[in-house]
Length: 151
Image 1 (cartoon, rainbow, N blue to C red):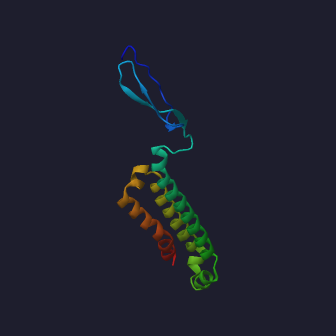
Image 2: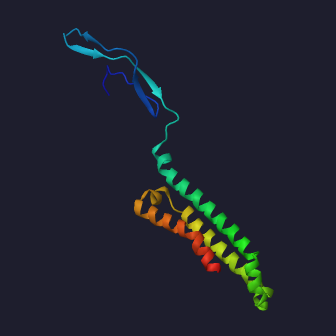
Image 3: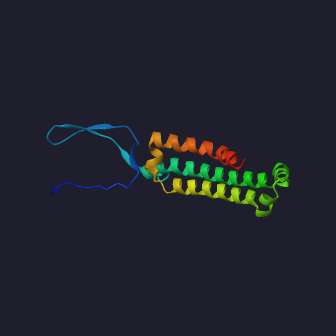
C-alpha cells in the first residue's frame, strides 16, 4: 500500500520475544527512537480457540460413553443375578419369553440414543453454561434411572 513500507508476515500462534536490552537511536531528523531487539517465536503446542471450545464437549462425551458402558455392564450383571433368577422362578411366562433380557436391551438402547443425541450437539451447546449444566445433570442421573427402570 505504501511504496517504502516493508511488510513482514508472522506465522499463526507466534509472538515476539525481547532478546536483549533496548537502546535509543537518533534519526536524521533528530527524533529519538527506542530500538528493541526481538525474535519471533512460534508456539506450535498452544491450542486454537476451536480446540479449547471442543475440549468440554470431548470430556463430556468421554464421560457419557463410559456411563453408557457402565449401564450396559450393570444391566447384564443384573439380568444374570440370583435375585432376578428368584423372581423369574415365580414368573414362568416372563422367563420363557426372556422379558428380563428384552427390558435390559431396551434400556441399553435408550441410553445409547441419549448418547447419540449428545454426540450430535456441537461445541457451542457444551460451552453454554445452562445447557452444559442440564446435560451434566442428565449424565449423573443416567445410571440410576436405567437401573431403577429395570427394577
